Image (cartoon, rainbow, N blue to C red; front, top):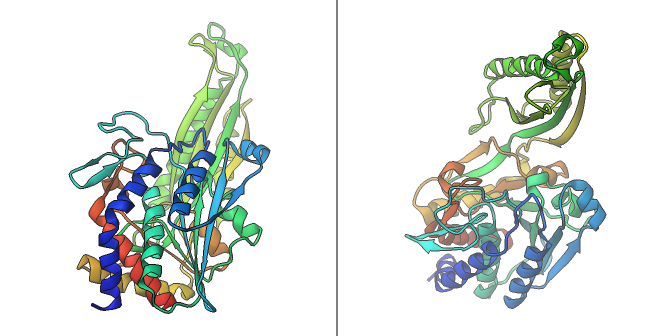
Length: 407
């Protein structure tokens, strides 16, 4: 039995324990909002200690977290040093959107049925907290000479942009890896992703009685003019094509609208929030300036309407860095060996925390346990789940890749 087969055998022998670990993680809710995620970090640290892994705890100051829009964040870092050489960090996030409606399984139950484990964050990305942990445990159990080291980085604000998760750790020099692997799915290695601009637009008019409309200025009509102008941009965006496989074109979505006071009142204020996805080829400053221009020009066509624009989020796109080749090559080689099919590289229209590492010059790749598409996993929808065989095989792929990189 060669070393790769020994790693595989260890993962198989301990897989029931890994599934139990994931069930424990799913059963501690991390819905964001409200974003009270420190209890999950405490439970995770306790479970890691049971595996002989001491986690450093970094609690973000309460007021900073509340100003951010969440309740509590404690980030965890586990450091395993084997000798001189490169450090490979692995990052997964524990925060997740609320469960919503339509579940046929307990969203925090971790129920296993027909080879699938159900629960919010089972696929994105508490599963990879276990993928990475058990890959490291398998590697260390091998007893082979190793060099360099590993960091497990478990954070809790990906849904809010990652600034108080990986961003906070990177800013303070608490992690400086040579390579980064981040939570993903099993059938492709993602090396690039979209950027994202989110803005809150407040349209001001003048509230008045609907019986005397001439005495008011309808903020909703102003908002409609602006929305029509923004949606017209999407027709232009579809003419722009990314050269990154897996990414199509830019897109703008308005996901929330609030306004008005009553049916018989001319609305004096309307607020909407927009999400502008940016392909890797776009310049973020130019994109924001253009969105602001479109809004201002549309508002100017509506007498009496004024607009306030607040940037909520600016996430840069992830662009491939050439230094990620050893990591990508290892994942592709072992992915094909374990899954029995080629594992291509691709981009994704999502945005992730990985961009924060890329901005610091850390070569990165996104790979972990999961299906071919986000849609198949039901991530962010009812009955989110992970196929346990994907979890088992992805853990083997990561363990084998670590051996190549550190052996």
